Image (cartoon, rainbow, N blue to C red; front, side, top):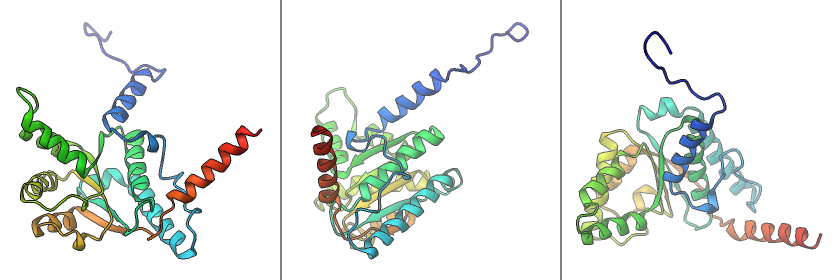
Length: 232
């Protein structure tokens, strides 16, 4: 009590903060595969060549400093664009790690979605009777403080698809919302409408990833560790 008023005081045990954090992590819809991953524990020792490892180290350093300087960068609305011609190079892993770190360090809401998931949600809204409308869905996507768009460029180039992506990206650019992209090609090679390409160039710093898949290498290491544990 202060005077005649009741004042809410944060719980010293941190239960409320933990509940808020868990809620934000749940909202992010980050795949279980990437749960608990951070920029700090992103591995660069699994790349086969020194050149690939060096490129991955540079990407990791950029990601780490991005998280550290996030509050200042957030004012600019500038995100990152991770790209590599090879699937399984680690770009999604690092993009999600940034989102995890931002949620945990700054309690800022983030959302993860592939481009195909976004398109599926939009198409589902067309069939909804009294449910979420397409306009509301797009506005909700625009308003998310940090959005990770995975695999941009894999979707088929159709008029309605490009129009929706333009609306989403233009809205996020205007509102200076942070967007982190991953792709199998450089921004200028996306093959999308010039309006979309120009906005991505404005919204994100391109960061090159090694053209090497480490997914199989990591799978072999994990299997070896599991086998050793099971054999005692």
